[in-house]
Image 1 (spheres, rainbow over the protein chains, first blue to last red):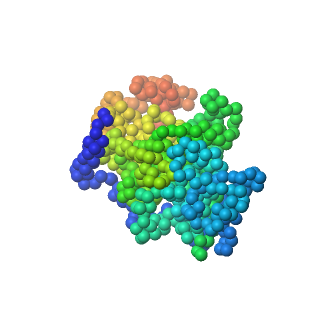
Image 2 (image 1 turned 90 degrees about the horizontal axis):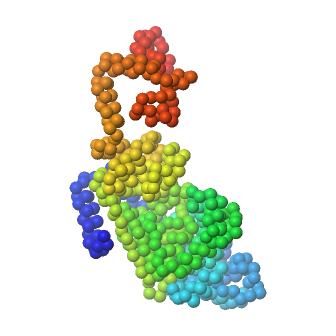
Image 3 (image 1 turned 120 degrees about the horizontal axis):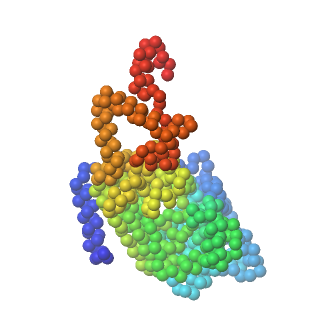
Length: 246
Length: 326
């Protein structure tokens, strides 16, 4: 049965073409065959609240949490504070966290501040290497930035790239995501519209291999419909939103 | 796992993972995480289905809440996505819209926790992601569904709303009506269509009461009752209905052709029914074959003492005296 791949493809496509040619109407309901252009928004953009406030409320509803750093405050200090909360043993022992490369995180004086608090970043360069994989898989905190964040659903978008592993936002039990204010959008659709205008959408998908939207911690209700967190992905998702206008 | 009780899962975990007995879902979940994490990190190949495939960018989208989808598409060296040919949407915007629709109708969430869009293997210099990515497109009877005129059924997003709202399936669960891959009203439509011999699963389209709630809750507005009715028609044309049914319909057609004939036969049947055994309430407890299929499990309501036509004639006579108060 396993014929040549292109033969099977030609067979399927030929069949579909001839069917479409034969029939005046493939679907009975024409209204459902096309989607609106421009696309509609399923969940409305936040109205009366600020984007940051809406994002924080939404993420909290989904068992995530959010911390807002005002202009002039130190983002790196906030990261240290949150890691300290997650890892109480931090004060006594040096700790490694799984992270994107420091220059992908857009936080001034990050490594210096972390080093003072005994925290070092482990930035994997190849997770198919067994030693790297073993080292990464035992870490409890993952630190990433985001490609974009969305106020109406409390979601973030993560890309993969040089210095930006998927593992950092996936393997550790705790995910800490840094959200620059300039990347916070009201809806997915608003973000897509911007990417289309700039002609960046295709390149973004292609260059990152995988683009993932993440909305709160990993969850399941498979066992007797009881909600459990941290099934395969992180159990806590904490966003630190900061003003990056300067 | 959804259809198993916590005790059953705990028992399974005790046996397979050597876990101490517990009824706490959280503990069992943690055990599953630990066990499967090892598998995810050592597996050579990850295989997933596909919720949407985006034509303009060549992207495979999968949605999960647990994160198993991101694991399978990110950690192993090879990633294989298996998709039905109907999963293709034109643009990125369409996939995001349908994602929100399928989630809303499936679990009531606004969006699932994860939406992973894979557009190929990892690029040079990337720290992770599969080294190879393959997509298997499956027709397996789907183009035949178009051929038979039921393309609307291919719009299904597999949200399960029709299954969850169906008054029949809501009571009896998704595993009833045999081992078909797709259960519920949409399953009753696509199973015979995907089958090489549609008459082999001929009961499915007839199981619905056609109440129409499946059509109302469908996020892509598939007219399921219409499709079910058309399938019944097609199956009957194929001779799938039982012989007694065909005979009965032919006999009824003959009987109902003339009012006088109909009245006479109705009277005869009513009179004959008096010869049959009855319960204390007067209901019929035993009918002759093939109607005994009914009375084997329940009683048949007793025939009214006056027929509809008698009542109608009486009412029509008295109608002028003003009895139309409803």
